[in-house]
Image (cartoon, rainbow, N blue to C red):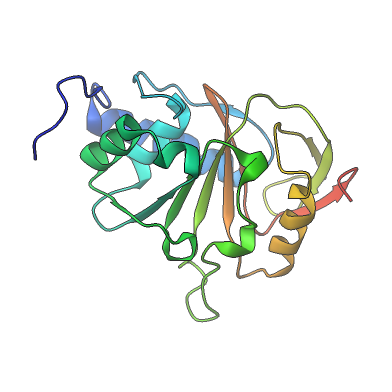
Length: 201
């Protein structure tokens, strides 16, 4: 495969770095709504964030289908970087994706547009990776598995109806999608099993 001479590199130590990132991702999903630092010594093409790129390098491979939102899909360096370094196949259908990467959450499709799994195979669902700017905005209160009592959480920017969509996603449990929010160097998980209450109602 011929590649652009300016293609940015992936992890300096692919095995060790991918394993470290994977452990951080699993921690974020096990402790919903609690941002954790994801150290990613990589350069990524804009508008992809370094943390989202690290997630792609750790979780995506030749057997995964990846959906990109309009902004990412229109950036040729992002498409080339992702497909070259992960081998993943891109899909235009969010419902056919194993992973979705969203750089503009305020304009993203409803969560119901992505694969929610089946009663026999609920794990055949999309993990949606959403790039946000900060842990701020509308505060919601999360509870459920991995949370001792409750935890407050906020992320911005998001779609105006996002938290209602997230509650509807939880209501479909064990079906539904899992979410990963990313800033430049932190990630926070929101599994479909997490209950969402608070100001977003």
